[in-house]
Length: 198
Length: 198
Image 1 (spheres, chains in turn blue, purple):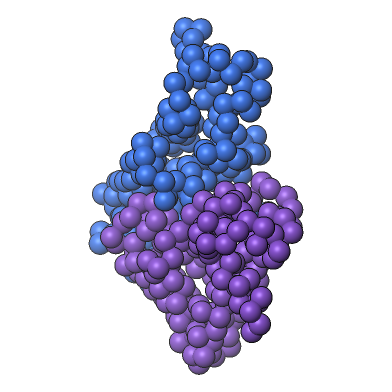
Image 2 (image 1 turned 30 degrees about the vertical axis):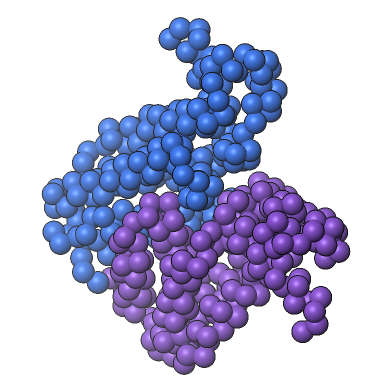
């Protein structure tokens, strides 16, 4: 990695942290420059506009999320082990206090739902990809004989993501000490219901 | 209702709509005055500060949500009919295109999770009350013999709210035409699992 690329990555890491707290619209180049100890013109050398910075921040977050949360789970055997690992890693990331602003994608999903533009388009595509991945992971568990043959895997993905949204809400807004247990119990219930017809 | 009170209510209705789209921080007195066709100083006669406007906007939204979504459901017989009516009314409200910004509470939950202050405190208390209400509605269904005796009703409420968050996400960010069906199927599954142990 060249020096320019490393700097760019450091900027985007900080930008994702700020944006998760303050929103992508609240992401000011001045505040970002301040947090990084660089000049505003130094930032402009990397990003031509705030819009480009927002888009690249989402893109970098996505790359990191895949590398840190999803890829390790995909090292698990296909079927239930991998399905559980995806959920466990995602939960662990949500609980990780070294990301004080929480999940940028969940925050941006609310912020950008009414804001047309390249940042929204990127987020929508990323969320579709993520839900598609949850669905395919369930499909593999069906193929392995771990989940029932007639399972609606897109429905499974919808419900799994709902649990993760509920976890994020209980943890970050309500600071509910039972949040993690609630999410784990909900996911266990979803798996039980996906093994046999209740 | 006096004239002053009616004006105040009209202001807060518009404020809730703007805040659901632009965020509570994005709620500018100038833009609000513009939308209402009144002067900025006219607004200041009603709210001494932006902070007070934010808090009162949340409060008014809560009052309206209770009156329009929850109260009609509570006219249903206790037990499953009421439980289903709460979910159905909430879903209908989420789908209602006359609220283009979506649910102010869900939007504010993300925006305020890191912002200490009276608006956050009010929202946290309101959300605890709402989840408590979902839980007690499930408890009544247990008492009526509609749901199983050992049901964890707080867990039920957590899962029900997760489905509503998933609906909001699928509908407003993804514009998924299947969002409503997915949420309804998820809730039916939750009820099935709450009747008998799967």
